[in-house]
Length: 191
Image 1: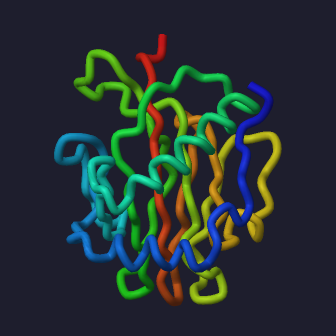
Image 2: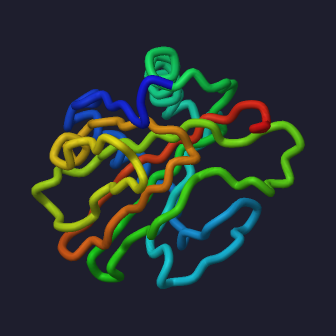
């Protein structure tokens, strides 16, 4: 592994980000939970956000899955070198000031996931919102040696990749609304 994270600044244009949002917001939302298969925990003080699931079978988003997979292969080849084989879905997350949206410190690997074959290996977060339209809502990392520039990863259209075992958080949105995409790349069980 060459680093703890890498990012593609401005990978998607503001117009593309807005198009993703326009189509994605047509999908019904639900309150976010933590975990798999219905959620391990859904404590309001730990994770407050609305989420929508974009599925690979949706023809309106085939291009998005192709773009994200292409980026993931490059990020993994150049930085992480973990064994990834699939992406199942993309999560569109909303963090709003009205409910102080946030997701406290966590990692994305569910060790006890009831899946005999796969664990999450790599995570990607894509910033969809113009950062001048909200306050708070920063993506933060813990226990890393080098920290990405906050203004870079807040830039609309930027995609940041990191190993799913890395602890991170989305800080509380205190003004406005932030939208992001989260993608998880699975591979054979960690061992």
